[in-house]
Structures are given as structure tokens and as C-alpha cells.
Amino acid sequence: MRVKAAMSAVVFTAAMSLTACTTQGAAPVGGGGAAPTEHTDDISVGVQPDPAAVALLPADVKAKGTLVAAEDLTSPPTTFMASDNNTPIGFNPDIARLIAAKLGLKLEIKNVKFDVIIPGLQGNRYDLTVSTMGTSAERLKVLDMIDYLTNGSAVATAHGNPKHLAMDSLCGATLGVQSGTTQELKWLPKLNQDNCVSKGKDPIKAVALPSVNDALTQVASRRIDGVFYDATSLNWAKAKQPNAFDVLQPVLNPLPVAIALNLNSPLTPAVQAALQSVIDSPKYQEALSRWGFDGLGVTKAARSKPQPK
Image 1: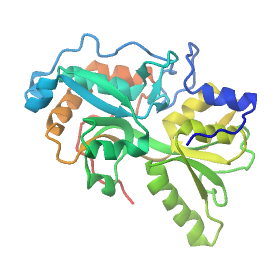
Image 2: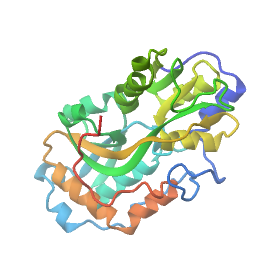
Image 3: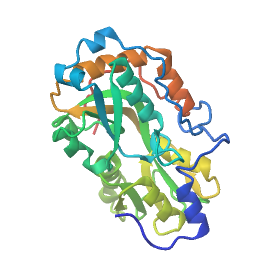
Image 4: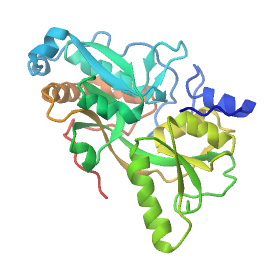
């Protein structure tokens, strides 16, 4: 359920800026690379299939000829819709397109709310997801997960940080989180327990919302104190609306995030081999650089391990 309350002009601008086309440079969202802009070209054009990865494809997938990826297209710059409202763009669609090209398959991207992606994978409605999904012991019980990027969590506040929040003093604050994310399920409860509850302080209040856009809208209108979400997306919002948001430092839990498939999927070995072929090619660094993710890449398409508690 999206927020329907009336928004002021600044709130409307702040929310819309997350998916608006831009030709202006913005502050890096990751490790200090080039400023991101809206890239609508297909990065996989000219990429040839990798014979070793193709050889691992299940016969039914090879016969179908299409790889179906579930992605929540509400989180720039990793996964969002271009200003034509028709083209999925961002780092995650780039990686999905490159994997499909390495497998000699066409790619079909389905726009799916993040918190229903895992049931969709389990129901075999989608082949995989490339959606900046953090690894957890619970997810590894039902998913095959393969590392492809490093990301961390941060908090965005209204510009000027009116509640004077800091990453080590969030007790009593009301923070928006996207439903189903690692921030909602793991990192915010841990922050609450370690920094607030165990010390007798007022707990952090979590407000679960359908998307980061909804959460940022509520921050800009001062209905909540901050958003706890992926650092890449929050830095993008700050870059697009520097007078609407601040992002607190430091980034927490900079750990690998993963591509996910249904547990024991026969497609997993082929996807892992294709991803490694992408990582070993110049296209991987191109994808990182054009979304401002320099320094956030991985060198190995490793099967994911549970993140530290």
C-alpha cells in the first residue's frame, strides 16, 4: 500500500527525482567512482555466449530460450524504471542482461515487489532475482545465492538532520524500512537490541513501507525521522535532491549481496558460471562505473555464506 496523503511540492519533487531522467552529474553512490546518470542502452549488446556456461544450461531452459528475472523496479540506482516508464535500468538489470547474454538467452524482467520475490522463486514463476538481496541463514534455507556486489546500510534524514541523529544514536527515532529487506528483518532489530534495548533506552520504531520511494517521501514531509536502507540508493537520493536529504555516516555492514534462485535449482551452476564470466570481462567494471559503484565489485561469483550476526 503506497502512501496517499497529500504531499508538498518539495516532497513530490524528492520522490519523483528518484526515477527522473537526468543528464547532470551526481555525487558517487558507492566507492567514489563516476557520477551516475540514467543509462538506457543495453550493456549486453555485442556480448557473446560463454560456451562453458551454456553447456551447463538445463535442457528445458535452453529450449525455452528466455531467462526470467524478478526485480523490484523502485530502488535507483540499482533497479528502477527509466523516465519512459517502460525500460528497466540500473546496475541490477545490467547484470541480469549480461548473464543472459553469456548464456545465449533472451532476458525478461518482471517488476515484482521485493517482499514477494522469494515466494515467486519458490513457486518457479521466475528463474532468478538480481535485486541487491542480502544473504541470511533463513534465506539460504530456501534459496541458492551467489555473490555479485558489495553493499551496506545507511540512514537518510531530512536535510539538516533536524532530529540530530547519528548512526550510533538512533534510539527513539522512527525509521522507515522497505518490507522484506535485510534492514527490516535483521539489521534494524540488531541495532535496536545492541544500542537501545540492552542499554535501557527508548527503542527505534520501525515503519515498514512498500518501497524506498515511499519511505523517502515520508522523510521529506517529516512524518518519519529517517530511512534505513541500502547505502547506494540513499546516496543516489541525496545526489538528486541535496536540499531534501542527508545521509549519515558511516555505512554499516558493507557485505556481499547476492543473485538468488530457488534452492537446488538446476539452473544455478549455469548462472554462477555466466556471472563469473561477466566478472572476468570488461563489462563488469563498465557496469560498476556507469552507476557510480567503483570499489563495490567482487572478484569471484562465490556461493553465498550467512552474514555475521
